[in-house]
Length: 589
Ligand SMILES: *Cc1c(COP(=O)(O)O)cnc(C)c1O
Image 1 (cartoon, protein in one colour):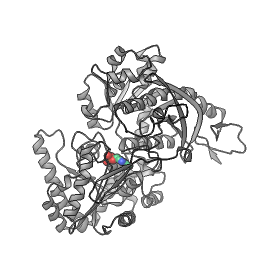
Image 2 (cartoon, protein in one colour; image 1 turned 45 degrees about the horizontal axis):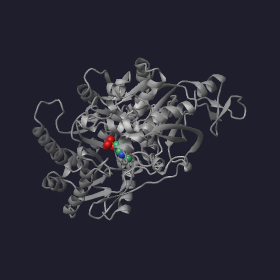
Image 3 (cartoon, protein in one colour; image 1 turned 135 degrees about the vertical axis):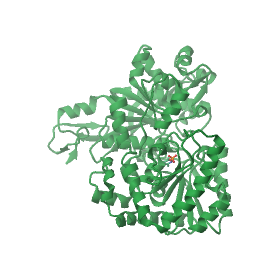
Image 4 (cartoon, helix red, strand yellow; image 1 turned 120 degrees about the vertical axis):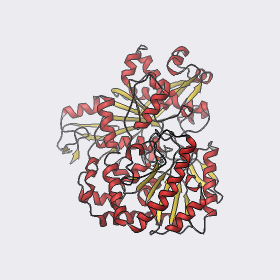
């Protein structure tokens, strides 16, 4: 028996007369109706510069790409008619090594697409800087146990017909200079629309996951006789950036030089901004449905872009992907059906406390073993363990916990703690690299008292181990820079308790002392910035010393109840199944 990818019904592959060969894979259907929908039904094309589909396919750098992967996984589970488009990034983002002094070394993370995907016979061309560039496409199919399937298209310019320089356009995710980035965005946005057409997909919506794919709007304008209303009806735009300085922008001289596709400069300026081509603005002006990724991010975005109707759909994580083996077993035993209906996790109280604690200890053991094998810091499973892992960049403030080493020492004397860090800095982010060095120097300073490790080469696999194996997930971004954040949601579904600054998703997830703890005041409190920074430090050490450490060591039942609240009051909601149902009903329909 196999499952019909459209309706999910079991089908006898020997007997059914309804089958199609879709680039080498045969699909079986219950009826002609489902077969027809599979081939010709309207699709949502989901464009993302990065996609984290699995650890071995290193075409992601952080939360944005992992969210894209989770989006696709949930869409497959829910049998939504999605197709994803991205770049093949043959040399990945970067493979990180760290010297003993905390210096980051970067290497290409080369991978072989043919190990995971199939090269399709279709090619298209785009004109870049006056040259025709040929684009090939690899197909990866995300299959769900429900029968659902989402095709992923990875665009590739490494074809013999292209010049050596052009062959490298799809090598490095976020690599190179402005010109390199614009070429990539031409391939993604314009090339992507053309590939979908060449493959005969019937696309009813183009969903831009962040502004990088914004040039697709220009291609659609061209195809629709410059009819703006028509194009807007076709486009959905999700912004992930809460501050003006972080928008993807290109000077018009470079745009004119490279975008040799006959797009009149007046049109570009009208929709993309007068002084520079602002990809966020372009996508905003040419999309009917626009959303931020948390409620507070929607508010920031409305302030940045007055006059636009910006809505919000709060991010999530894919439940099955981010739940450790031990909690999966527990959920299977007590909450059947949770993986495809994660709202059932609201019933977490049916799980006995001892079993929840046992599952956590097993996950923690796995993590501590992993850390002890990889480093020479000998961590142990009894000690309260805090985790902090995400891209190493200034606004994430990884070193905030070291602001006052004496206070940290005092807390550690109250009850021992150990700290696990991980995260890559972008090759050109000097401040980000400096953060890693600083953590190394704190690690040396505190060596005889507090065990600290920095794990190399943070990726999805390490993220899964960390977000399930620590006791507390620490997050200290500088508001308002964290549009959403998702790693804390991964922690929550594993009963790991969040201790976080009130920004992004935590504004919606935090119930003080019930689902976790807040660091600092809520952003709407009308006090000065200096006072806010002071309150953050007070909470950080105060709550660690007087609440978190005592509760962990002396009140295990209270702790386990908070773990269960993380599952029943956070994870049941902050997942991509709920998120995709909302995109389907609010943005796509
Ligand atoms: C989930 C995830 C992130 C996102 O982390 P935030 O704390 O939300 O920034 C980044 N990198 C990897 C590898 C992840 O799995």
